[in-house]
Image (cartoon, rainbow, N blue to C red; front, side, top):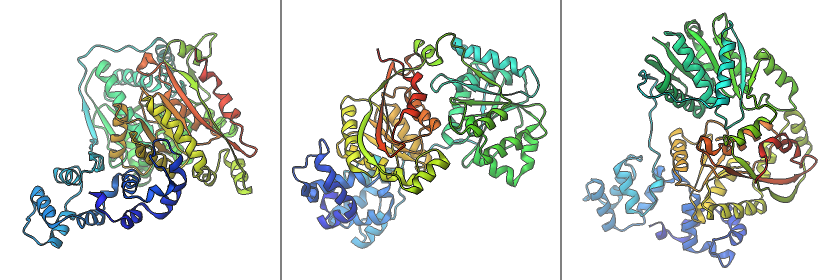
Length: 545
């Protein structure tokens, strides 16, 4: 029924700026169906553009629901009112007010509203999933799941260190090699050895926190000796004091704000902690994160500190920060013993890591840097946000990206797309939907229920592409990813490794034998060569035989 809107209304809904942009790019987009640029002003295309570019939240706005209702007849609105259980004898104006004012959510009336207007069910808000503050886990009654041989050796080395008092060390394992699972085995073993005690796991995102909970629950269900509690301390869940053996999972930001207000909580919890684990440990030397860890460990002469990382430093060139990180963990590191092979060769041979098939997209587009850009790069060793925004708004570049994505989608590949900005992620996602490929967008502002829903759709094969900016680099596990598409230029080895890592899981751990890596390679003045970042990861790639 959106097609009942006047053309002028549809143009206003889409927006003149977007229409001007699409008028240039859409005629060159494969599958667009446009014979002439001005075709986008026809009702058919305006409706399609609106549905593709409007976003999932458009119907959550009462004003828009009112606008739709104004375009149906009195007979139709009375029928809709009866369907929704609203008194259809009210006059037209009151019916619009009553129907548009109903609660919009994942409920039957909202579904009926969408069905009446023949709109996709995806316009509904995502189902909410409440995570309890405390969850009790019963001791297991299922067979033991063993670690892989290289994970067992990491486990044994860690146990040996923990035999000594107050140890600090890092476990470094490449992305995709099961460092979280290995760490959970250590944690579960230590809890079994210390009944009544607790272990704290700290991470910097909700995804990483919940991933840790799920992994612990799985491992404890196989090797736990008694009932324990899982305590969630992130998002809306507050930190609580354990009453028995517990696995406490906390977000850095939540713990920081909690300890500022109630430092006594740290004092009450720390005495019963046997291990504190820092996920993505290279971030721990940031002042806020470091303060949280030091508060937990202050005057604590019992707890061991374990860091987990795939990359041992925050960057290859931030030498002082890498040294600070090393010092923080007493210079102790445990890593995979791969013999004469590199660790990546070793893990590829075991099919733990997939082979990477490199397929660079070379744009040959030249970007000149301003003096401010150069200064930012010198200070922060990565490209400034303004430059990333400029590059991501380049529609000549975006056109090449969309052509490449079309090719992969037609092969029914499952693609994770890393954009250079939120706007680019939304724009590419909308173009894919316009071309009738399944795509969704997520960023840091996407609600946790919506994000969880989109990721689950991707895992179940209901999406071709999941587009994102600033998220999905960690705490996201979709082993069947076929293609990692990086359209975000970066000089950060840590960030780059996190993006590439989403496609590294091999067939031995439920992933794929080969994952394609598509890098968009630009010619950026002075800093355009990707060799510094890519050469650092040369061992990841291996051969594509």
